[in-house]
Image (cartoon, rainbow, N blue to C red; front, side):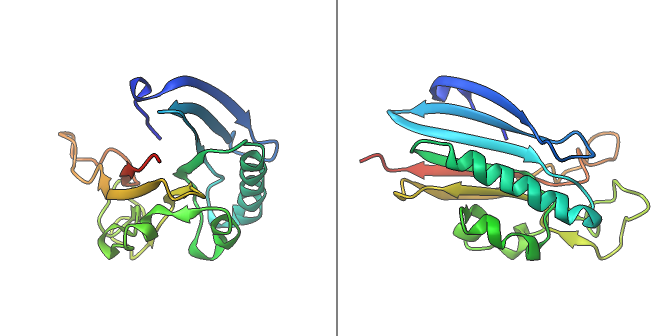
Length: 178
């Protein structure tokens, strides 16, 4: 997750290592002030592979506990969550999925798409498509609305590879501060 620090004031960062991880994962928390409104950005790379579902669920609970410690404002949460669709109900009870708020565009569903992205040679061309990368918002007062949601990193580099085996997410939000 990238933010432009000059857009905000009172910017502070904190890294929260996950106590439960075999892959060195953790959570990055960035607190900012935007025109008098506190905003928290949370970014993570949750445990990979289908076999690590229970560890990911515990990591998501740590994220939810971190959210509960936030006193007011808007919270954005995202990253390479490695979740499958059947793993997000607990998460979505605390957040709104920005992809869904953007109308669930079918062409922007799969951020890890082995049909389109051949960076992982052993999986290239296989019909494996998942929405690992997600961005959520917890905005109880409805101050932020997505106005643009798209992928980046869909073009090959001069070396012939994509920048990553995942396509990145770009989200532009509109705000109404009343």
